[in-house]
Length: 299
Image (cartoon, rainbow, N blue to C red; front, side, top):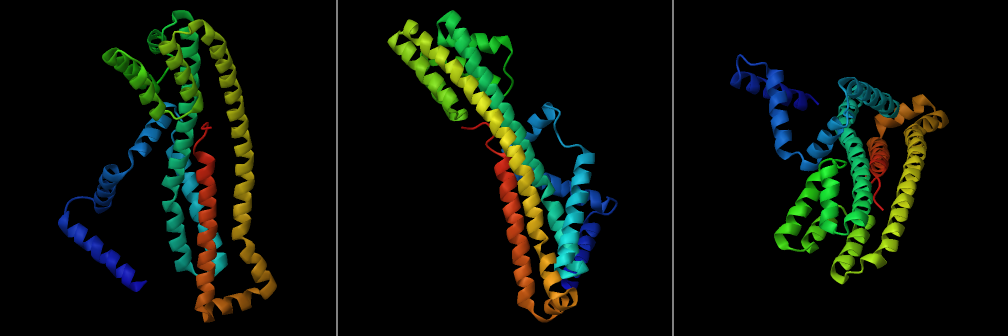
């Protein structure tokens, strides 16, 4: 620990000498931000920007509350395990480091829900437009010009229209959209339009299009039911995860606190086992959070 402190002091001195007249804290923050912006995944920027557009971005107050809860929880749990202030502080810092990751998972959930709703609007309105125009490209133009779509789906539909006019067919347009939005309702609708366009069976397709609208309604209902089930599972899952951490209190009750602390001081492998338990429980909770927040609406 003394070596780590000396290294931190040496790093501070080096930074200070190289940046006289500039706030060292601000310099470190700026450098960390520039490195993050350079190497952060594009998907994070995308989902965060969309959350901001939808006015669902985390506020400073929300970040502060989450940081306090995580650091306080990590301190209490690690103290109950090790009764060591240094170890508790280290676990506090590690826990706070996961706050941005959890925010990212939340943004992914928001973005996934948004994309699914846009896919629903795209498929439903395209089918309705096709029933009037009897032309897939004209239907796309009608959906795009109506303004019911938002980016990125709106831009992708415009690209589909451009590809159709450029190539004189809808094959590449459909392949492009299938790759961007891998939903079975999208693929089924596109496959049906391909058959209609190439085989000319527009009248026979009317019943299939009507059935597809019913399928979309059924899918949307199923997705919203799944969201409610996920919310219920999520609450129970977090409670169960916290209880796993607190099982150490049962061990102390059975052994006695004094005997437990004596084991910690005399046997190194006991500490290693306790660290392993904390890491395993944390991984278990993070995996559950990841499952809860991703692939919302994907069949």
